[in-house]
Image 1 (spheres, rainbow, N blue to C red):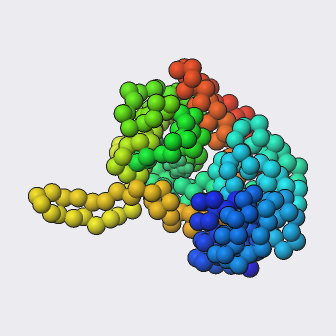
Image 2: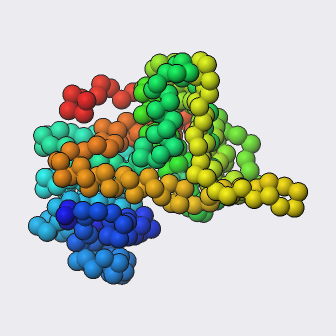
Length: 333
Ligand code: ISE
């Protein structure tokens, strides 16, 4: 039984605490922490865990064997570094840290520890649909992948959501999953600012058209549209030399009525990818028993941060910006 401490008891923290304590096998949540004591107490009520208000105390607790970090992104780095220093495995929700320099510090600390301890919560790599897509692409049955067209649509976002968050919060999923999917590396980033929807607040550029070029010569475009109103709509179509392959969405009933055919679209990202979150954390728990990390590493977190920085720069410059990550260290190969 892996004894886990969870740092950060907001929305995703509570989701993961419920998942770890009620759904998954071989794991127990023994401690939770939040700077807001009330939030921590509420979350502890789900699983009967010890309560901390300082993540450092939770990491230092000898009962805690491994740490799950679900605090706001800016606070991830501190806890992840504390866990590495304590030699404990740590699962950090995305982003690993908010700047590429901070992610690099984590990568260097992990390499210096000599142990693979860090996994980043890029859940789409655990989604069944993306796995099916990857299997077809890697078979090369339809030839080489040439380009991909994606949409990342949210029905609505909070008033605090900013133009940069379209990269850091939203595009970040495609940033991680697409290079994994096509087994290629990114070369450059470009953002085309589109005509704005009337449904976005004045401070927010929405929708935005984001373009990746890969070292292998592929073009990947992503429409990020976070006030689309109608649903949480994730699409990905890869165009190959002799066919196209499209991500399947979870099935919902097809209803015929009133001279029309309708099928539902999920509205919440938590529900759209719910199975991938379960699979992701169960895999992390199972891998702990073998002392390995199967999922996205700290290096993947660093690559995502460098790529995100290039996209934010491209939002401002309107130019094609290079994405330079350097060689992947031997430790992560
Ligand atoms: C949110 O944090 C997510 O992870 C969702 O998948 C994404 O669609 C949304 O835009 C983000 O704010």
